[in-house]
Each structure stands twice: as structure tokens, then as C-alpha cells.
Length: 292
Image (cartoon, rainbow, N blue to C red; front, side, top):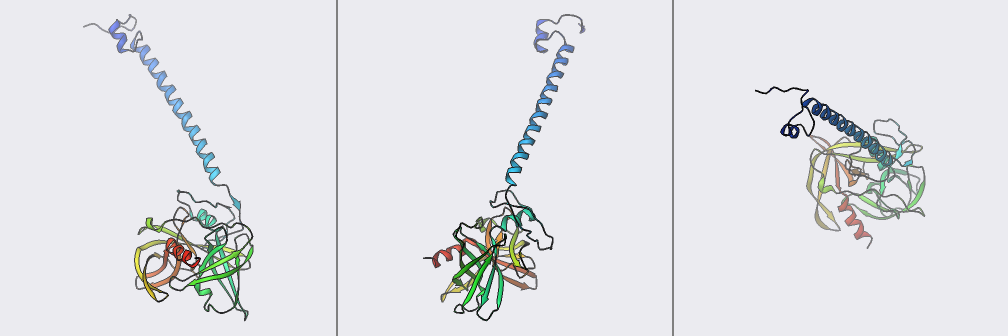
């Protein structure tokens, strides 16, 4: 049997096995060098991709500076506000700063001087907004309406119409410039077990944002309502959460920061406390009918 001699010249058939190199040792040395350079190139590519990712992420985080919105736990934060939603899930801090550009505190003052406050939000850039109908117990009672934004600007508003069946009021805010409506989403993709957020507001000397998170306990529950003497059915979603007074009339957001619902009422049952919400598309359909 012929033994391998590292000092001899390899026959032609052996050169083909060793990639054209004269010996196994030289072949292995060259092969090792190639592996090293391949690994080095892969490491350099990973570093460049990491820098590119950081750059894109930094661009996504830019926005307008806002005034101390407040989470439900009571901690104050002052962070950039992002007005556009993405397909990426947001943290609670990101959620509240995304929502607050569109959420308002509605202040309703009666002729007798009684003042009521509630949450609301813009649904169009020309000033249409929604809030809870309970702020207007009597449609014929003269009132003065103001809305307060996160940057502490107060605008006058008028009541356009009420929908007692779903519990919302449609307002028209006169600002003189474009406002920021919520980014609309679709309740169809919300399922049991998902986390949703209700972004409300309150006015305690200044504007404060509140954020309530809850897990979807049931979705697509049919409920009968009566509107203008006619019975109809709407789909209701229930969140397992203990609400605070600011959530009613507030928008309901999915995890990407898109408004998918309108928070209507509280439900207390033997199984716990729940927050009820109807689809934002259902509400907007009725709004469009009101504006005809």
C-alpha cells in the first residue's frame, strides 16, 4: 500500500481531490484561510446590518415633544410623541404617547355653571371628535363645550348629534388648522386573549393622559340596540379590566397603536368587571349617516 508522503508531489488524480494543491497540508491550510475570511466577512456583514437597524429604529422614534402624559399607575413621563402607527407592537409608554396626540379632555359647562369632564378623541383632521353621550344628559340644554389637547390648547366645540344607542356624542371642534385623528384599525382581527388599550384623559389643572390595558374576554358578542325606534344588532367586545372614569368615550387601541373601538360602558357580573367596546367602523358608519 502506498503511504502518503507530505514531501512528494501529488499525482494528478490527487490534485483534483485537494483542489489543485500539491499536498493535503497545503490544501487544509488554504481551506482554513478561506473559512477564516468567510467568518470575518459574515461578522462584518452582521455589524453593518446592526448599524442599519439602529438607524432605522432611531428614525421611527422621532416625533414631537409633549407635556407629561400620565399612566394609570400615576407615574409621569415626558417622551417624544409618535403620530403614526406601525405594524410593530408598542409598549405601554409608546402606546400612550402615540394616542395622546389624538385624545382630548372634553369640558361641558351648563348655564348654571355645572362643569362635566370626559374623554374624547379626533376622528378627522378637520375637527370632528367623539366623546361619551353622558356629558349631554339633555340635548336641549344650552351648554358651552371646550376640548383640551395634550399640549394644553383649548378649542371651542359644538355638539353635532347624539347616539344614545351606542352612547357617543359627535362634536365639531373649531381650530383653524388640521388636527391629528386616531389611526384607524380593524376590530375584525381582534380575538379572545389579545391585549387592548383604552386611552383616556383628565384635566386636573392641566391635561393628563390615562392608559388602561385589558385582555379580551369575549369578542363579537351580539347586542341588541334601539335607534330611532328601530331594533338592530351590534357586535360588542368585552375587556377584562377595572375601568376608571376617564375611559368611557375613549378610543380602544390594538397593540400596534391603531384605534379599533369606542369604549361605551362598564359591565359588572359574577365573573368580574368588564369594559365594553364597539367597533370604530360601526361608529363611523353612524357618524357618516349623521353628516348626510
